[in-house]
Image 1: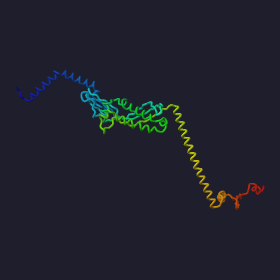
Image 2 (image 1 turned 45 degrees about the vertical axis):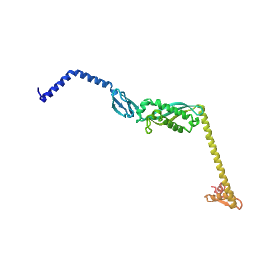
Image 3 (image 1 turned 180 degrees about the horizontal axis):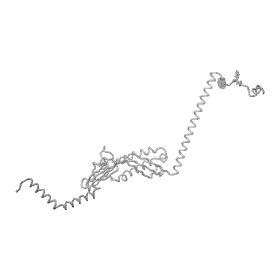
Image 4 (image 1 turned 180 degrees about the vertical axis):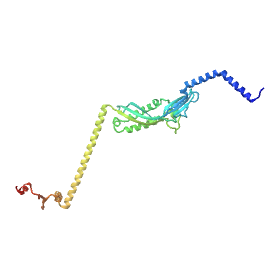
Length: 310
């Protein structure tokens, strides 16, 4: 028996080469089948999550939906029997039209828009207990229910004029509280866990009332504006009357102290101003009457009379 190591190595290589030659066809077929399987299940094995999205993995032969992990953007390799559910986690906006009833029974058509996005940290819980259509199952019904409930507490005048921002804030707050207090979340999340849907805000884009109600509201608002205008005019007149009473009281007090009639005093003031002007004049001072002003310049006739003839 040859115990030379080199001979032993050569013999082993020969046996391996012979084994491969005998099973070459089988190996090639297996490789071809493996390559075909990879190509066939390529989209199920290599998962690409685009920007602004996140994935939730469902393990068919494991524990089902992975609640503790959400897969962010990137490319991942999974077993073909597992499935990756991809969610849009960017800010989203939806618009909804609805018909509501006011507190006096009138029908009002509303168009509201709202913004929201799913929370990345609780995406697995959202997928297991609600699903990809969570907007239709949870968000939209809550929006409509709370909007109808809040609008029913207002009258059409308030909706049409001054309280739209107040209504928006009230609906946003109540919808957010309602969505975040779902029973499925109460049993799963702790008190400090983030919400599974982050509700941003709600806007009332359009309010449509019956035409006769709009006309009635506009007449009422116009009457209110006219009433305010009349009140302002009355207040101004009262202030003017008060000003004149104060002025008259001052004039009477001036006359009682000085003994001079106010008209005579005004005449003296006017005479002083005219006397200081550049125009030539003659001032005749009287004792009981106002001063008399005579123009010192010759008249046109006098000028013509004094002009020598050619």
